[in-house]
Image (cartoon, rainbow, N blue to C red):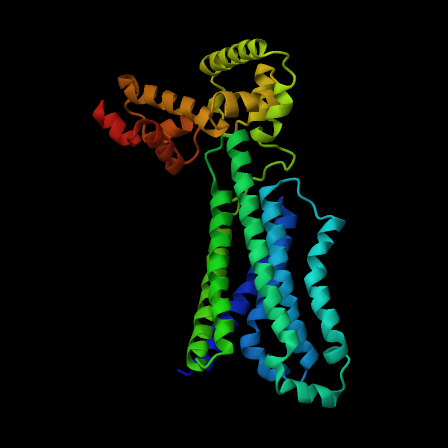
Length: 380
């Protein structure tokens, strides 16, 4: 099969799937409408970009449309970045300041106005023959590369902070949001590496390799789109955003410590709070609630949430996530040792002690005992 025909076929399927995914995101009923809309527009922009593999022959006489198709791609990564923010933070809202993400596409189009958008038909025909070597095209490609690096790094930094805040404030063992977004960002980084290599080969003597790499890029784009569709269908309730006003313990520690007059008083207060906390955890067993948060626990024991965060994450040297799961594992170990409850399955036990995922339970159990729950029960 001719490579061009193969590439066009793959691109057509990718565009169709992307638009189908966008339609699904725009119409599906969900609480996080902003995230869905941002991601839908990301897919629409991606479809416009991928359409270049098969629409060029139809619009080559309309140079302004070709330029628009190239420049519109500068919206893809800003949309992805805002999508990551909207998924990670439940209180995220679009504000006027986010218009700054439009600066690259505005800059590029202002550069194009005098030479292309306002050019006569005769001038456009002259320019179309050497379009790939125009300085403006180089500008777009260079800008896209810088843009990808900036937004990919920014996305990873957001995810890093999200994970740290999540571990310090939540106990739900499910980290599917972080894993999904991290995987997606990594896949986009690898895919764009292939695109960057393809663009370099465009201006080299390796024309045949460039054509084959086009096919590879189109195939990867189709794979990524289908992967995202499967994720959306299999995990419709994937996300649990956190509040953006939550702070890391290292950021609030100095402020909390300033409230205490002396080191001795501080140590006594810390010891007392730790004792109260441990006693409450052992007697009331709040960890049995799979959705327990540090705010809820602070309300229950009447300790300011900032003080409780510093107490657990700094003075006890544990993430809140690990602190609570340790009690869950201890409870599970007690049930596994109890011969009168040997009829309970591992699945029943994990739900009883506050977990809601078998894989998360097994991971946490092995972390504390070096054995899986089944192996621990068999070793008794």
